Length: 324
Image 1 (cartoon, rainbow, N blue to C red):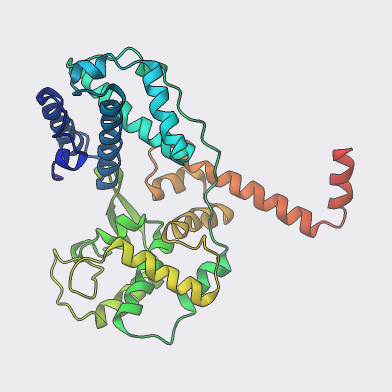
Image 2 (image 1 turned 90 degrees about the horizontal axis):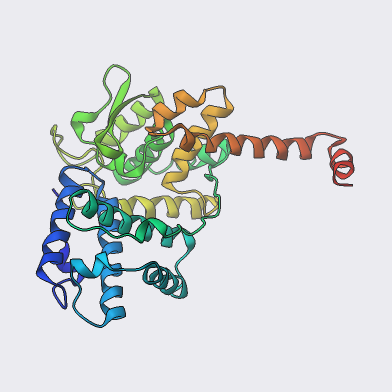
């Protein structure tokens, strides 16, 4: 269970006891019953806290459950407008609204309180963004161009990046692995979003790179020890892993889009380009919805258009005629 974070929301000032207690119960529901990730928990908690603090300033009096039930459509719009004026993007405002809606819908389902206006609040329009994978040559450079460094930290980073690209893992999924999760029978088992476990075939190059790192890692192995260790003997921090890939991409002059998550996007895109079908890729990535995986088909379409324009001798003339 994650720690209750009500105090970090500054809810102890001008907040009625009924609301304070209800927020804690909602947080417990998020962690125990809903099983959300730590990232989602922090985001929802922060969003609700900011919303309640806005209402406290907006009304200039103590906030209680009755305050939430009477919050109007105009109040919601004022809150979103304030976030916009503070420079938050449409995607950030949409995420904040999602967190608040989650809280209010939970209150409604629990029979604690009903707000009649929240259903009428329109989600900010988010620009359609495609995943930004790396080219195959860029991915290979990132993974294999630094062969001269054979200290255990460099080997650890290379093993992590090879695992991300070779299996399409999320960075938090990879860093959560323990020694007991090492590949067996040609598969690696990972715990994804919503505590859903999935099996992914693992390439021999990934196994070999992991073995090279493990052979030099100075910390003794135990089943419950983290697979990827930090220099201070604790589980590798996500921020350190992200810095490591930034350092390598700067050294190799790769684009800023070369990130740990780009390796996951590259895994899916390169599989699709080489004949894998969407259902297979959906299973490997752990997507709950096929529509999420379908974004990669748009990348392929864009790539086909780029190749056509650059390679077909008559493409420019044909495109010019189409535009006339």
